[in-house]
Image (cartoon, rainbow, N blue to C red):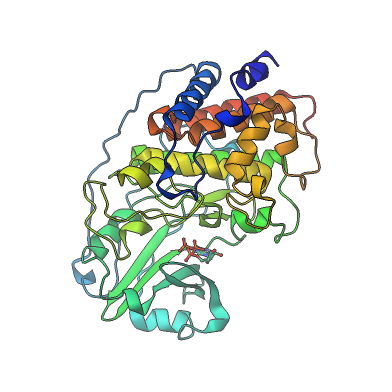
Length: 406
Ligand SMILES: Nc1ncnc2c1ncn2[C@@H]1O[C@H](COP(=O)(O)OP(=O)(O)OP(=O)(O)O)[C@@H](O)[C@H]1O
């Protein structure tokens, strides 16, 4: 409780940070910045007392390409790697008996893809996104996959290094990342074949479109899964990957509600400017999740994903979209609304009303404080993704001890 008070103390109503994700150019005032930084510093003192050392693992540089794959498909040698040791295991490793199914890369040519998708039948269409249309397809082997077909208008502009990018992404094998299984790059077609994840998006679940509403424990585990997936991309992938579009519709859930981050690195595959330096001339991402500092400086770092994760964590806890124009004006930007309520001492009221259980106030305070810390306007105030996973893991340990559980 003392902790909670301290979190509230320095706040005044008009001290609210100017990091409305919709605001143009994010002209956060210095004053608000200082106060908010102070707040996050306070959070840091209480919530993340550890010093984080970023250890970048050097991955074995095996990048084997099938010499026959140049014009059509992609046999991709899988560089199967153990999960990073420093990251605590995801909850379900502990709680669910591992029923591990090895997902193998697929080897398809255009004719096989056409057959598997019944010539891109609308009946097999499962979604539409920025990259193109997504189909559910069953291969001759019986394996069910998702096939993304790039929109025709993007063909001319697609990166020339498409295949090498895909090969890099295809080596990534982590339980919390949607596995890329192959691609077809032939003539006019750019297709990406990924693992099919059967239980819809996190947003569908928060909207109650998938049956039972997620309870607190499931939300916490999903948040941990996402943190682990992102930590892997930031720290342990052969080449560091910044997702750039972390959001609830890019989180897919399995039947057992394990979360998998989708579309990682896809920003690198679509039409884009040369971005080797991570300084872009165009900001990419989704309104509401976009890092204000990235919008100001065009400089992309892993902390942009941390910001989006903070917004996503608030979404997971409140059930609310980051921006919801159907709400009263003061509630439209969820971050601002939640931050204000939190500072007024009403963290409990922020929890999604659809959750039936009464969640321990201290746990909610810790989770929201972590989310706000991730969504700090200044990137230096945000923790690394790895630390976020560790903090969530510690919150989960507290939750398991809490008397109200279940
Ligand atoms: N691997 C997959 N398994 C199952 N369903 C998928 C898979 N990939 C995508 N989908 C479905 O297709 C929809 C569209 O996905 P896609 O990634 O193309 O777009 P998006 O994430 O909604 O939008 P954006 O392009 O802005 O990221 C998803 O919302 C999801 O319902």
